[in-house]
Image 1 (cartoon, rainbow, N blue to C red):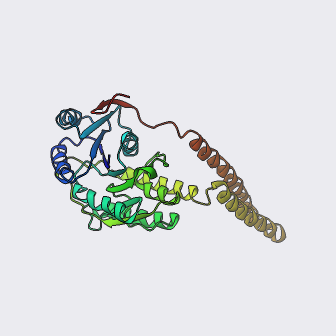
Image 2: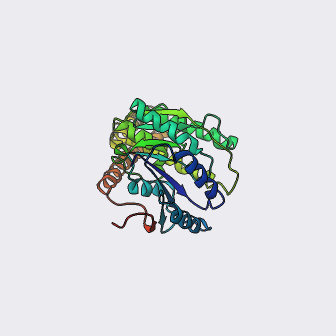
Image 3: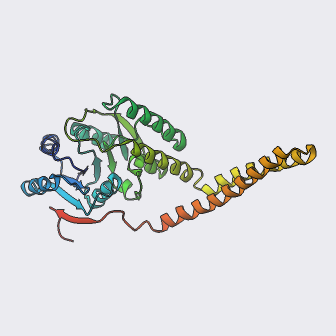
Length: 307
């Protein structure tokens, strides 16, 4: 199998007929052995019925139905684990990503040896606030991780399967897959791709999603700070402790109650930082020890061979 295309789907029944047509148009007759894996993430509309019908008509299209809505990261992880292709392309099911960009990204992987090619929505067709917040998050991610990409949030990406096998997904981390791959030694680049305004259905990206992404950004900072969050918080705790000692000394010498109070507050914060670093270190280590556990449950499969 040359290529697996993984598409998470959540309440996109209006867009699915055109999505199927575009995928067929772009992939069939190109000399590729391919499969399209659509992962229904607990849709409450008629998306499941449509996927079942289409899979019966074309064996190149396969579907996974998750037991409930687990989120986009879990849906992508399920599709990636079920894939058979040497390369894996990912895109959204809302037709804002253009299936015509799949093969150019794939050729960049094949011809120039890249293991990850990430799409860049240079002319993005979203609201000003969403685009602006995305730019801030992208700059933060580049500064924190050292990987300079313009658009981490673009779902249109192509990966070498061997690269993805080394990565375990959780939270909202699917958008940061190129960073994980980069820090494991993969060659990563980006290419400008098309982006279309949503025509049918409703966007699933509310402003709470932005908050979750920011939280994941903080986690990335801790994870990539020499791989030791305890070291970061220990340094911060030492700095606060030294500052509090200086305030205690100044307050004692000059008999200033304010300095003594500030010193007490900073000393409490210093102890809290060290304790938080210990807790975070334990959480991260526990996570890596439990990597074999998936964050999704597959309820039904279509066009997959029985294992």
